[in-house]
Image (cartoon, rainbow, N blue to C red; front, side, top):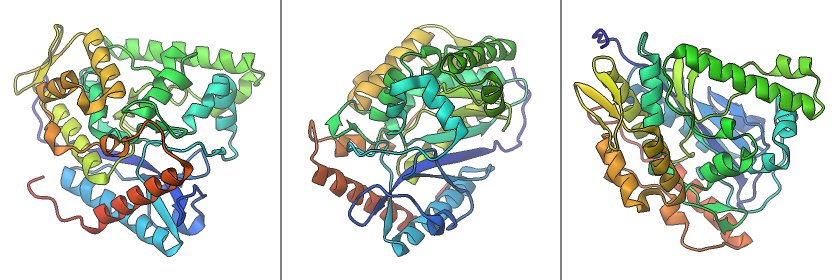
Length: 371
């Protein structure tokens, strides 16, 4: 059991968006867009940007900051004849070029041709402050909550064809890192921080050896990566930020992203004072106990969340058991994915349609009630 504390739990968000011109074609953001707000950075491919918040002590503060920052960038984009697209893949089969980076070159060498799949992925990372003495309980709870990625699946398409309800998750976990299954997949529950550290060291050693085998100098790899930064599993203990990071969600509209972050912070609030118990087929989070199902049960739900999203009844039921208000979410993938394939013209129209939805979302934002 933890020791009760009323200290606020800090949380932050990093969200990625595709940049398009007025015709819906992928373009580089340009310096004006990058300077529109604090927290805006280039990503590793040319038409992708990332917008970050600072660690916030409440959902209201997080919502305000995310909407303000995204809003500034959206307004600047409009001035520059650009748009931001909140879809997890670019939908079409455009060539997507890397920005010059030693780290990216090493990753591409390690992963090989399958690194092309990573270039088509835009996601959201949610950080929640680690609770001293409960870090592993927090990590394991986030692992059990991983099927919640279904709540914000935002694109079913890859290269113009329907791939899965969560196309980005399928690309990332099942295709890009298929040759490195310990990297892209969800890791099982950990016993303690020592076990987590051992896992990191093993994965890092594998990564370094793969890079050396691909012709990269060992010193170069070790200069560019440490054990923490070389790992791409969806739920991570982050010593650098003192957070547990959840990397599974797609990029999506800001309201749903903030709602997810609020639920994760609420789960951590429970962990402070509750027993965390692992076992059985079902889970629940209540005042006295956080019950996490067996890991195999979680992975079955994760697979269904990627394949079918909220159309899978078992995913909806599980998320409700774990305390999510499923009806509050509107994952865009179920609106976007009406066809098995889309034409080049459809691709550009979809991008512009969802850039407009993002613009409306930040324009129409109202002060949150009761959060």
